[in-house]
Amino acid sequence: MKMVIKATLCTLGVGLAGLAEAADVSAEKVEALIEAAFAHAPAEVRGRVEQDETLRVCTAYRDNPPDDQWDAILEREKARIVYPADGVLMGDWKVALKEANNGYGWRMRDIPERVVGGNCYACHQLTEAEVGYGNLGPSLLGYGKDREIDEELIVATYNKIFNAQSVLPCSQMPRFGSNGFLTPEQVRDYVAMLLDPESPVNK
Amino acid sequence: MSLTRYAGAAAFMAVALLAVPLAAQEEGGELVQYHAMLADRFANPGWFFVDRGEALWKTPAGPKNATLEACDLGLGPGVVEGAYAQLPRYFADVDRVMDAETRIAWCRQELQGIPFEETAKKAFSKNRETSEMQDLVIYIAAMSDEMPIAMPTAHPKEQEAIELGKALFYRRASMLDYSCATCHSNDGARIRLQKLSNLEDPKQAGPVVASWPTYRVSHETVRTMQHRMWDCMWQMRFPDVAYGSDVTVALISYLTHMAEGEPMASPSLKR
Image (cartoon, rainbow over all chains, first blue to last red):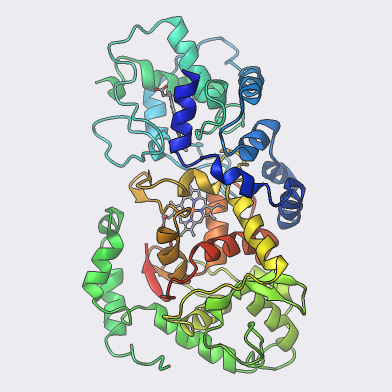
């Protein structure tokens, strides 16, 4: 399984050939540039420009980490998953389906009161009706169809959306929950969008 | 080179262009449609900005009441023709690599006495408006029209800027964990219906880089490469990246290096 996934990552344009070249400039130099270019950023957003350990590793290996790093990322990112206080992992698919088409939120000068969208359509096909979808991720059309919607699948789907790298290290999909982009309560709405038999995703 | 050859039909075409419904622009190949309609790249509203830029370049301004005509864009003081196609480059007087915009902003400071920070603050206009920098940059770019991109690489700092830009291109960060490569390293990739150029491929990077600065139809104004860098980083949820910073200059150096040899084609027309 792992080899298959890694091979897929390679075809996404992260071949190893570039790695030696990338090592020509030091990471410290790159970080110094970043530091200077964002020195005037407001304190509450300046931290965003820094990489955590996982992104440092993904960057260093062009998203194709060696085995030990692969396992370390899985472990680290799994530990960062947070569930809603009431433990309910299936929310309202209607809310999520609307916000799956929404790219608003967390950009500079975005209004904090407005709903932050998961914007899944940017990368995924979700329903027959919506043709304006991107293709950086696989089609999720019929994701919950003809499947047994048991606890295991619900948790796995929640985990994937909350922290994509807890399932696939260096995934191109954002770690929506762990990065604080979406709340646990929002994440469960997206779980319902993918798994609820009533959701147009499964029609 | 005559910058007036486009006149005539341009005003009419500008109106016709803006009347195209936005829906049509969402389709793939949107620019092809525009180009077919316009038939001629000199019927592009961008050329009005070029005109304004030329006037700004040659009119005394700032606390020092000087023109920009003595600005050294790399080919010697006063030489504008062909300069953009050979930028970014290393400048000994500042001991760093600068792209066209950073250099022009620096010249405004040195020659006209307008502080760099002042220029940076007003560099990006609102939609449907323009800024002095946008006009100036597209004028300088138009003065390299059809000339092949030839960013110099002899100086170690030029080589370093390209390497740093490449490293930054693959550096993942901020709230969505994106790097530039997330969106710009796949053939045939789309965000929604928006086609994404694969900037790892020189064949695609060439025409992309050569066509900036551009008249952006959705913004109803001219946008520059510094703006495009800021724009993509804003979408990536970065704080506003400093105008003319080593980060934007390095990214532009890397992209420009990838575009080596491509004939300049600015002003162009983009969504």
